[in-house]
Image (tube, rainbow, N blue to C red; front, side, top):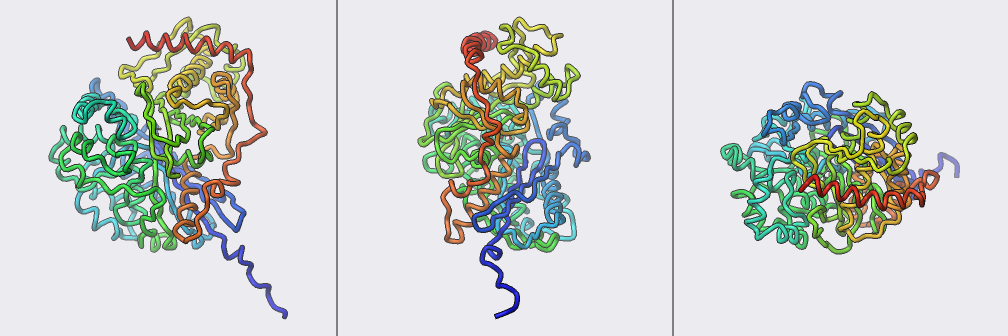
Length: 542
Ligand code: XUL
């Protein structure tokens, strides 16, 4: 029989999955194409907030009013939910205009900066599903807000509320045992409590409190989305064992809080489909919208850490270290967090605020670019001849430092090279010291995030941890993780579930060509320097 060959089943099977990452400084989208057993990234773009949306007046994604606040409020940090909606609208248009066959999009999910909260009034429930496709999303989101700004993870102004919540539930240990973390300033519960105390009328007018992740998912699906257990663990409100709100924590935090929170639902839940707004406005199909999660839980998937053993270090706006934990064992020194993992297990994590911003401060203070930064590292010896820096340019999360200030020991502030080495060594030693609680013997590290492109930085990481370090193909493991989660959830919902190993296969292969191994002489130097660093840290905090 002649005529065109039948379309192969492989061709008919190809599908697109979208992963968005609404981070502190930008919105990124990664689209993956899955065709039978073949899979690849077909779209990868970022919209930096400050440059793309200058009308909102953010600096590094933070409203500059909060950055320039008078003493006393200087610990606050806010961003704009309307800007995030604007970025979503712009990014979805970029995808629609990219030349991809968007009709093949089967599912979309996302990742978001953790802890930030968005406060919506009662109009939202009706408005979300009926956005006007001829008008920009941002102008339609603004009237749904009961609070114009969203406190974000960089806010450390809730010390008093942390104490109050911990006392009400029977102490920090009890809170950590139930929710995975002691009370942390940036966590959503303490932030909600502060809002309820300082603006009770606006709190009363709040019908629904979303995380950044569930807010963005709601905008896509046109309905209030649930919070997934991964991001829900960053609130001091969710019981890790039941993956539901903890009645004690709710009571300790704010009045009527249970009625204002969305339900917790598994990370692979299908929230709905892309709403008519997206279908009419940009020609998207009724693709499945999968629950969003936090950026660190998504990075766990995007770095391929779906089983215990390896840890990942993400060098982003914040530096984080995380890995899978089979059982939720909270950190006894109060430094770290146990989160639910979007794979269904648990993850241990420690977070440092002085990540990229500290590296950029040192780079800029000495008039360097990244090449000069690397050259400075290459020109200085491991251990910096004993000179150290406590790199607290901003208030620090780990260890808790509310009065920022860089402390130098044996380090000349005028010596550019030594200061570059000092900031990198401090960050790596602090990562190593404050992740000991996880009880993991670290032999392999996957590095991700912007600064992971710098091999001189990664060599210090390898020497300090005495571990092999591999770079991953993509710098944005959070957006990739979100796309992979969309793929996983779509297969599950279609009745053809795939094990996580198969979901990540081909995407998160570490680049063996770039593997760095520890240099024994340097390992020895850091073994000693780390104790000195720990001592200097203790003294500074005493
Ligand atoms: C995690 C944390 C940060 C943000 C950054 O606890 O505070 O890593 O998620 O986006």
